[in-house]
Structures are given as structure tokens and as C-alpha cells.
Image (cartoon, rainbow, N blue to C red; front, side, top):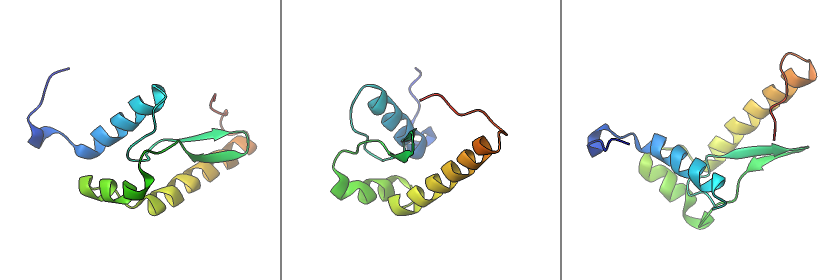
Length: 93
């Protein structure tokens, strides 16, 4: 991958990428951007150093985790409603 000057890199995009790579390699995430659904459970993947989570998020311009979690739960609720009304197919786990 081409290395970009730091002023051309969006730290929020890097946070999502970092968490996605960590989750897919069995590591806890740093920014708590990745959620999952398993049966009736919807929630975030494991997190590293949860005590400092909002500090890390704030440092790169992400909203608080509490606000993000509410947003993600609303998206999941809408998705589950659409599935129940057969408007879309459920995503594979």
C-alpha cells in the first residue's frame, strides 16, 4: 500500500481499519468500532484497555462510545425490523 503524508490520512478511517484487522485476527479492538449479532445478542466485539477507550476515541475525532453504541443499536434495530418484514435477507454470521 502506498504511504501517504500524515495530513492526507483520516485517523477515523484508520481506527475502523485497525479494529477490523484486530477482530479478524482474534485480537481485541482499540476503538470499539466493530459490532456483531449472534442470535438475539447484538454488541461490540472485545475491547483492549476499556478504561481509556473514550480518550482514544476523542483523540482521533470519534464520538463517545456511549453515543456510538446507541447509534449502532438503532441501526441494528432497523435492520432486524426489515428482516422481520422480509424486506431484506439476514446477513451471515
